[in-house]
Length: 205
Ligand code: ADP
Image (cartoon, rainbow, N blue to C red; front, side, top):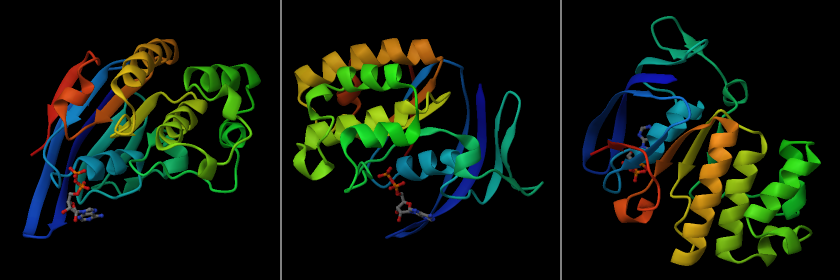
């Protein structure tokens, strides 16, 4: 389980807005995070990953406290080891598809499985600049999974995929999540985009 109880003042264009989130995410569960643009969905994921620091509160797993403002505990992103799919993919321009995965794991069998699920087998030696938007997005997802994370944070992960591709991928991903026992949080500004995903829901507004 990951228990979150945090606050952060957001510097919004129309002044200050306070993001307050208190929620326990069950192990192995999927939570869809929805809400309008600018509500703080990306900021929330980045606070869990350790990329943005909350103003106050606690983030803890069953066994480890990742963040505790009062006790001045703040584990680095590397220590938290979450899988993160960034909205803008954040791929490495000079690495091939396969190198992106090899950078994260040396499990060759796992790499091959991810390449296959991502429909990227025949693109293993391509750099991101030679991939379509959908392929880049699938690579971003597979790279996040390469470390076999116990917590996977995905920010608008299916936005560049057509409906057919998305449904097939979601079905495959749900099998992988179960295998990994990964707790998964998926952000989307459009609730319909996650129609094929069963799970819990958190609305931020
Ligand atoms: P969403 O993902 O729901 O569209 P974001 O999390 O991207 O929303 O942004 C929500 C608001 O938080 C924006 O107004 C943005 O300017 C503000 N914001 C983003 N990063 C920070 C930060 N590190 N500190 C304070 N405010 C931030």
